Image 1: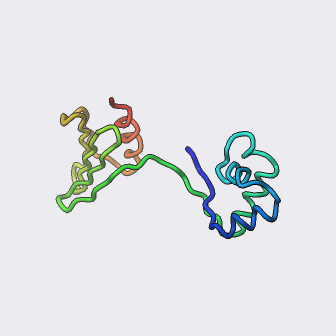
Image 2: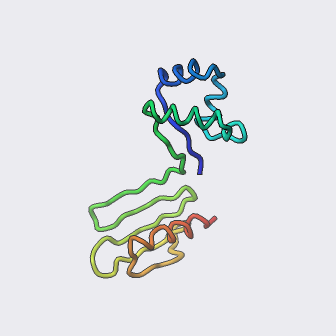
Image 3: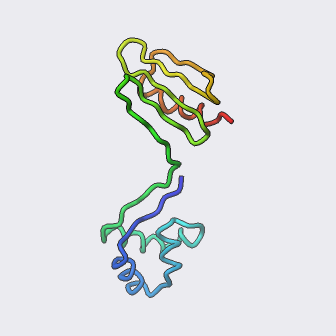
Length: 125
């Protein structure tokens, strides 16, 4: 999973002047990028960035989720799969739709089961 440190422009300028490095080096450090992003200098740059209000950000695929009033939570995965979780007490099931057809059904789904269902559904093509 990709990650980077988000900083303000003024903090970036501070780091450039403090370490007397190029903007590219700051980018390598803040993006944990390759060999140049894993040097002692890069570690120092990240430390200063975090001390000046930097925030570590994680880049993940976007997944749209709707919490509907009709008793279902629906999640639309990037590969076109729809996960439909029943929120009402009782069954608490999940249907996995692929190309408009139910391809798998789960009964009594717990919150801890959801990542495994999502991972399986993400493999459908």
